[in-house]
Image (cartoon, rainbow, N blue to C red; front, top):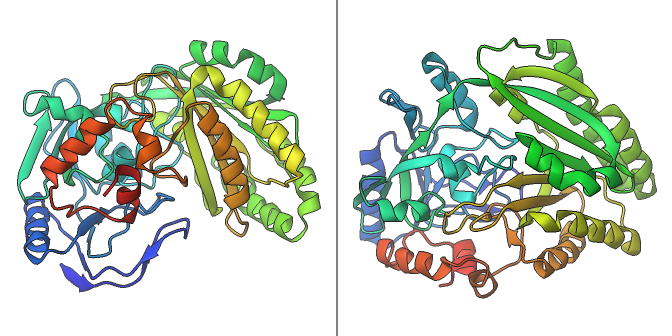
Length: 437
């Protein structure tokens, strides 16, 4: 299906574009036809999923390949739990597709609106000292190269390319199919509680090492952290989920409805933000429940915001957070959104923010009615001092010159891009900035 391009914008409203035309492939063959047609006309082409990246990574100035209809399970899972999906499959659809086979994804982030191809291509991750980002679950991929050829990559075919294409920024080809290593269905016992920030920072290394999944949020202008500790249980364990009313009150009424009102109030009356943050800290946390993994990992987010996130050597997290706390106090800024801290093990993916090192992630946010630039730039300078790597799908100012020194395989990735997309069919301004022209 082809249509004249209307104005497209991402969820955060940080990027917009009017593509030359929009195509909606339903099959891998249709993806290949679209790429070949674009190549023949010399028009750039980009795939777009749900638009949940804050950067311009999915901006399509030529042909926009919308993957909404390229969705679903392909065949049956293998005996060892490998499952192949079409690239446009949304993360929130995957639990339903896997349920008949008793399988689940090994780890998830806290948002499930993304397409599977977009999530892996930008380095989306959850938390857990031994559970890597979503791209580490990739065991195979089918993509269409800049020459319009079908390229299959897995552990038996072009295996040497898997660490590159599993997290490829959309620069190496249009992903049509993704094979994931799934695990037997499991539950998570969730413990959420407020604790003194100082205690959390003093013990964060031990907590991260001892828990399956640990993360925390700090509300600026307070001395309190909201910690979240999830323990994996067998799928046969007893569920003790939140009641529908409790979940609605906590996750819809308070976390979204009330919090939206409080954030808006803060834009009108910035001096009330410290009071608002202390109130938010009291209204959230302090609950325990056990439920299916995807219902614990993910949360519903309807309050619109801007976000910047960097991956740092995990041992630097306490020092960096204390520097951010001092920065906010020194600048007398009023920051309404909490700072989120998560963790991931080292991996070997060429452009993963966790490549080669155990990683702590620190994410800063601003409400969408506020200007994030001064806050983000100042925090980014701190991240840079500690060797931070920016999340590919979240706001940052880095370019190819600075990024090349942060990734041991950066030059290898660029060389592979030259090979698979020599005419830069998949390029856009963002990729030209972070990878070079």
